[in-house]
Length: 114
Image 1 (cartoon, one colour):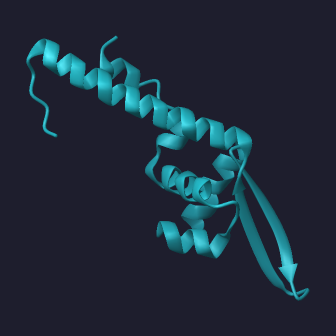
Image 2 (tube, rainbow, N blue to C red):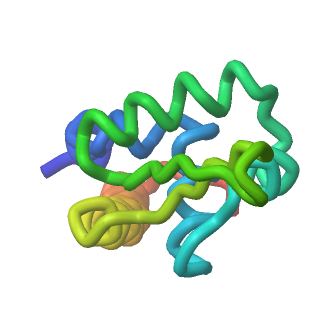
């Protein structure tokens, strides 16, 4: 299979850069607070909320809302087993695409940078 067709099969929900950033950050920790994750990714509050909603709808993240000292809202986010599996599969696909791209370029004598 040509590597370019394989790219079209990537999980588009994770492939979007902001969501990839969120998912990768969550994979690195067990749970993150909304503001910490926002700071880590550099997303605006609105963008973060929008992306998290899409990830939650796909069951890739779990969002918890609570109050500290009964009045300070706190939102926590954690990656679900489904999300962790999807991210692992995404990275496997990326690695596979890199390998078949290298092979394809060698077979066709097309030079790709890097």
